[in-house]
Amino acid sequence: MGWITDQLRRVAKLESLEHENPPSALDDSSPSQSVWVRLQNGIQQDAEEFRRSGGECKLDHVSDNQVRLLNSGAGIAAVITADLDAKTIEYRYEAERDSIAVPEQGILTIRRHGKPEQLYSADQPVSPEQARRMILEPALFPDLPTDQAVA
Image (cartoon, rainbow, N blue to C red; front, side, top):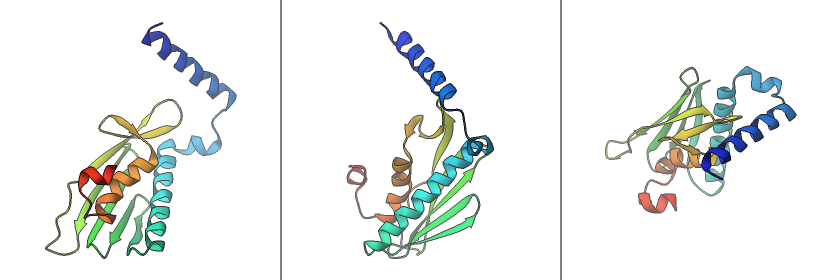
């Protein structure tokens, strides 16, 4: 059995699951919106956990499609902006002081891979937790070397 057969079985399984579990009313509104809301909720939980462990950060909901997390101790902010029409989530970093170096910006895409839609980075699927970690680590843990930040 080759990979074509494997893929056809996966497609048949997904179609079968869709018939058994029809989409809810929430799914009809905007699957991309659901991805964005889940990401925001996770960022909120991560910020709360960071504060509970003694870190200094503030999360602002700038608009319906933008949040800003500031790590005041490190002087770095992560600004996360969703463009749901384009199915993208862009993140960039801002220095709060002149002497702070910040990483380059990044982008996640929202794609349908079966049901529901999910996040992708550089054409690789990422879980919501992986996406949050990718976005927040440079702001919350700027002193960690990159190779240790991912481990």
